[in-house]
Length: 376
Image (cartoon, rainbow, N blue to C red):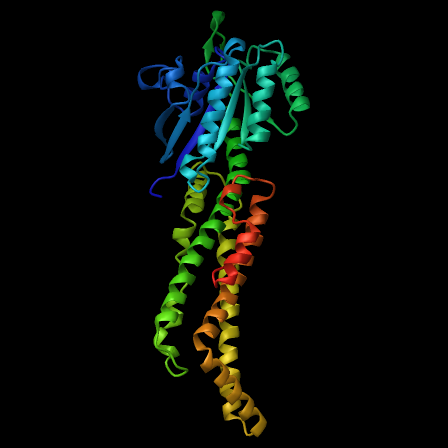
């Protein structure tokens, strides 16, 4: 992709400071309050995004109608529809929600049931990197610590960050400085790297399997149409036909996301794309060496002084000649199957318990059936 677009969603009840938080976090004064950034107050504009460039990347920040007790049912229905539409396109990372901020006024007396339900729904059910933001933390006093403890108790594993979005000058010349931005960004980048890098790596495994299937079918088609004998195998130029795809293209989304995190100065572990590339290359190289060994063994048999070895080599060569195309296709499928098994292993490693790509996985029954027809 030319420019990796990041989709973030900011949720919370009316009046908790969502707009001020966004202006402060993204260093965009007034964007979320005037003009095209006017706060969402009508259902028709619910979950529409504010789009702007930030640190050389495109950000889409989705705002929503303020959540209230009397509109909770309708709000939740629209939220679920919004999230479902994005889950229906798992192979298009530009449509995913890459992070969520749930904003709560730190001066609130307690955590409301609607807050608790949505925090669990986003972090646990939707499996989106989530951070709870406590606004007005400068004037909330002990309530900040109390709310943080309550959230950690009821929603284990959810991150909570106190924040003050606006610098305020008080009477007597005293002032309160805005704080919390660096902490929010740092935690967001860590969460994104830990979770979304793995999801993108899992998607890259599926993309690679698709590319390999297309490559396999192309090569098999050429073998089946070719006029072959044992002495014309070189005419196929299999080395060129089975050339590995461009890793930069297959992993473009994953590497663009790595670049996005790096643009914030985030120093992380970028091993996933390197691991994928080296694993696939290793399997291909091992199989190529094995193929060369098979032909070398026949060749050595013909050159042997032993009559039995020459006879054995002759029978082996004759067997290959009689079923040359089927033999070549069978050997190719062995190699592609090995790569697919390695990609399956890596996919399971990256996806873990995430069922985000469930609709893209081929049921085991179809795999068995397709192998019967010579397709992996």
